[in-house]
Image 1 (spheres, rainbow, N blue to C red):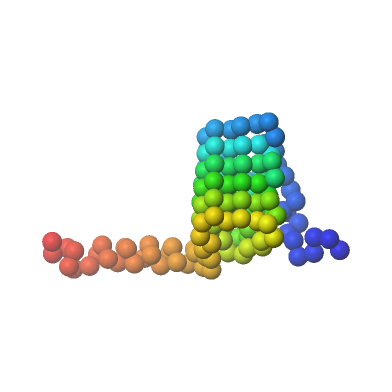
Image 2: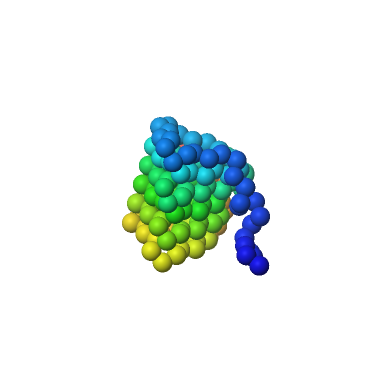
Length: 144
């Protein structure tokens, strides 16, 4: 009954950063990361994983966040890039731009920045890379 439509892997937690813990530096992870403490640095999920970052109402991240899935009820000061899904709970506060594919936002959640929908971000990146490769081979550039 409960959790219908939710991914079963989203409940998995591999690492917990406790309420009285303050990490300084970048954090790279895969699987599930639950933050009750404070991270000063970027938080990045390993590419190609279905990682989930959960920040409780006690948690705070000061830095850029790049993850596939985010469940936020705490604070993030910095840009957030979620390639799959973002869930903003009632006490969530983002001070920065939020890039997302799917978003669920509860009443009371705050985003102090831009909300930017990324429909097919991976396709757009590949197109830009292929365009830049052909521009380097152009006869006009070789003539310089």
